[in-house]
Amino acid sequence: MGKVIAVANQKGGVAKTTTTFNLGYELKEKGKRVLLIDYDPQGNLSLAAGINNEEVQGITELMQLEREDDPLPEIEDVAIKYHGLDIIPSNLVLATEEINLVNATCREYILKAVIDEYKNEYDYVLIDCGPTLGMLLINALTAADSVLIPVEPTDFSIKGLSLLLESVARTIRKLNKKLKVEGIIFTKVDMRTNVWASSIKDVKEVYGALNIFETKIPLRVAAEKANKRNVPIREFNKKDDSGVAYERLAMEVMENE
Image (cartoon, rainbow, N blue to C red; front, side, top):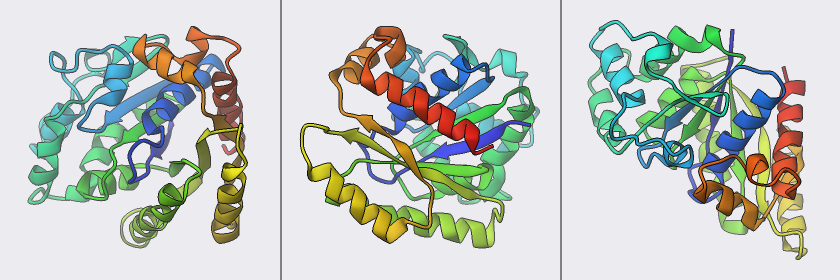
């Protein structure tokens, strides 16, 4: 049975999609079967993989089928194959699903029902969540076994952690008692300055009870260039520091099993 990890932070621009894409790739490189779910209406994960998400069935359509109690297709008919990964895409239509969920029966469990249909085919299912704290995120947290939180080491990014962790705590109390925090991963760390060190120290002081990954993802232009070429970082540059860091992150995640 696959482990379901929601990659979430209500602040945009903290490398959620880059983390989902490259962590998934590195887990696959370690021999794991991985499904990535683009769960952001902006569809950045789909775009990173070069998927024309306007022309394929995606997570929105699967959730619509589940809401209407219609049968879901086989995973082979919906997942896009890419560099050894399976990807369920998304697009802007997903934004309307938040409205549709309001009146849905068992509305918090729609995404979980979809994922439960497919997760036994995989070792890991990674959900790339959008930067919101609404019904879509609640569905992701309800469906997940754990939540991985990318955090940029800046005061503004760190202050937003409390809002997400409140949502996680509320979900645990009311909807998903098995949900855990997989860990906090620091991204876009500029090793040329010392500013990040004090920010990381602050997080450890406040959230030290949570798992904080030893791995830190350095700020590198290779990540942006890889995204533009629709490839994982290590396929763009095998030795790039940020790509190697995602390999280390994958090993830490596997140690959490």
